[in-house]
Image 1 (spheres, protein in one colour):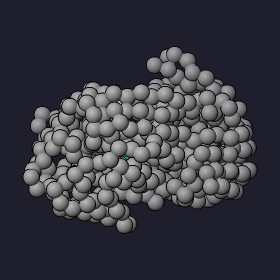
Image 2 (spheres, rainbow, N blue to C red):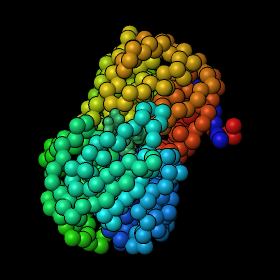
Image 3 (cartoon, protein in one colour):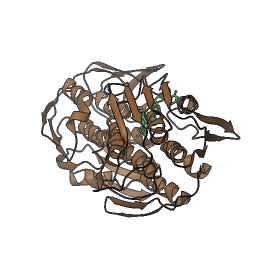
Length: 418
Ligand code: EPZ
């Protein structure tokens, strides 16, 4: 295992290019299994979660190449419809292969994705949705087993907004017997990116607010041009948090500011002056940060995936800030680690109260999940002295070459084997 060593405090200056979206790439790659064809997907980030998804698709019979950020994948030879435990357990997002296999073969056997650091990650909405749409689904010795009846389609109203739940039901409905209408769907940009990808292949999907309608087709068409994945709004938001720290001067490029409205409001709330271009965000941070309150929620509310990163900014803000985590039950694991830097954070159920401090001091910290790792990185860059972040493989799951990107901004950061 590797650890990151960071010499702080850093004053970062320069331009950072945002990579393609992890949470778009994963469902779009899974969607290539829905219809056996050759596909080219561009702007795919070189991160371990993408490699895990490609390995899963290869296990099912697909062939792929991945050069630079372009994936060429041939899914014509996919013949298996079972996603094995050893791959599903490492990445919850592999659950979206469920809808693709069900749509293609009329059956799918997926290991229960299991829990992770941020919660037990249930799939009850996926399961209820599949059943409501004519796919008999049971849990058999730790596996989700679905078999399609002759009467697929209909409607389902999600009881809670779920991103991969929405994506799974879309994938399973493309070739249904009759029309499908899904209510109370997730509206994250990554869901729209999946819909755009499927529509580019001839799928008939319309989204009006939280309602998605799918008119079934009998097959999809060949790609007439490569599909380019949207920029990663969570990576961009991570750098926006970093750019909001006093003394930094960072321009974020190749991003989609329209996908980051709530994060930009938070950055302005702490005192940053933010300038937007079509694909760029420039931030002039305040010398003294204001405290703010943040409530996470489904898009377009403030993203739970940026909660930890903005906490690392608020620990240095004057006064007391509050963060309410409304999406996941256990997404404050980074708090104990940030306290090692000298942060003053108290927790009461899903509410974090943060009393700003003047400065932070180096510490040795343990990463626990992807976004918490980014929060520790931001904290270490602000702290005086040499910090260490252990188990950095969590960070590599979702950030492409983040240490190189930070180094190019002037950070003193390097990797070492544990
Ligand atoms: C997606 O996860 C993202 N992952 C997550 O990003 C993100 O945090 C999350 O959406 C929320 O925005 C990908 O897109 C690959 P959910 P997902 O189903 O779909 C509950 C990252 O760091 N729920 O939208 O798994 C669930 O427990 C990752 O990039 C049910 O109760 O999340 C949670 O409280 C972390 N039953 C809430 O809904 C279900 O059947 C939202 O979960 C499904 C979900």
